[in-house]
Length: 275
Image (cartoon, rainbow, N blue to C red; front, side, top):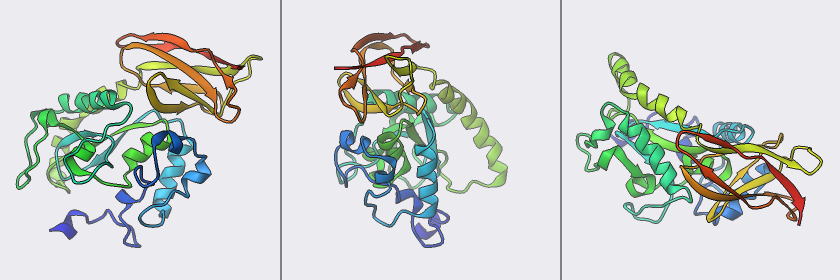
């Protein structure tokens, strides 16, 4: 049964690609990991050598300013927010600095799904997820997953969605699965338009890449693109934000107070000054 369950997840070398990304707890705290260059990220130890398929996905994620994503799986029915890695054994939640927001994203997906929000367990499974939602590590702790990698090393916030109890649904069931998930996917995509966004520039107006955006009391940094653009997902509320150049640490913006309102994206440009 186990060999059938994971059929198709290993590559030709027999490596489980769903456990092949750099791990969180094997290396250190998030603030240290985020400051790594893209080159150094590929040298973070993994259980197995980083595979060509994994390397291609990592390069794709790191080279593009993705903001929000979903990792789709099968074998259960639920919506799961990171971290997936965490204290062992299972059953202990492992929250990110953006735990409440990511939980909201997972709940948004589940609540708009035709079946997931009911929280029903699969046949022969002891797991039941209230409202169809759980922290990943609380349900099934794992190291080397893509969801944790995206959150730690890039700007991309990701949840994992388990689509069906059957790992490989039959062709005639696919239309049903599409109807079950369509509204959830549309609502989730709309979530990219929340929080704050803007341009980071030097005093002379030149846009600044290599810059990190921080929210007070949150260790998660968002990096600008090479054109100085940033997008920071945030729920409604009042925040203080600051930009700091990742190489020239004395280059920082003023601390700016912002208010994010429901259903809106706030435009807030920032200027780097020597301090």
